[in-house]
Length: 107
Length: 119
Image (cartoon, rainbow over all chains, first blue to last red; front, side, top):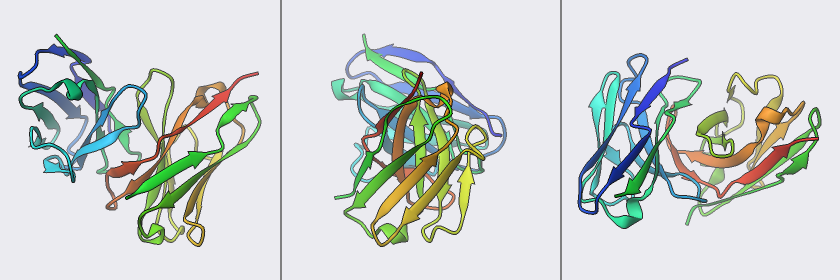
C-alpha cells in the first residue's frame, strides 16, 4: 500500500498569511493526488485534483503543486472561513490512501 | 445540484449486519463510479470500497474485504454498502462519494451516516 505522510499535523496562522501543507507519498504517484477541506461537523469537500487542478467553485487562493512523491497545498491570504482540517489522498493505485490530516487554526 | 444522501446508520452489536444506502440526485447516476469512505470519531479518512458505473467492477480496502459488499441500483439512483460481521473498529461516519475519473478523486460527498458498533 502507498503511505501518505502529511505535515504539519496542526498549524496556526494569522489572517492574510500564506500557509503551506505538505504531503509525501511512499512511492511515485504520478500526480494522482487530491486535497480536501473538512470543516467541523461537515463532510469533506474537494479542493484540488491531479495535484494542481482547482475543483469547480474553489477560490483561487488555493493552489496545489508537486510531482513524484512530494506535493503541497498552498493557501494565499488566509481567510477566517479557511479554518478547517485538510487531507491529501492518493488515487494512483488501490487501495486509495489518505494523509492523517492537518488542522488549521487562526492565530 | 449534485446531492448524495446517506441513510441506514445506527447502533448495532458486534457480529451483526447493517446495510447503508445513498440516494443520488442532480446527475446521471449510471454515468459515474461511486465509493464509500469512512471516518472514525476524531480520526482521519479511510477509503472503504469503490464500484464502477455499471456495477461490474468493485474494489475494497483490506480492513473490510470479505465482510462488506458495495452494490448499486442504477434504476433507483442508489448506492449500497452491506456490512456483515461488524466490529467495534468499524464505528465511523460513512460517506458516499462520487468519483469523477477512474482512478480518481472524490468530487462530491454526502453528509454521512454514523454507524456505532457496540454491545
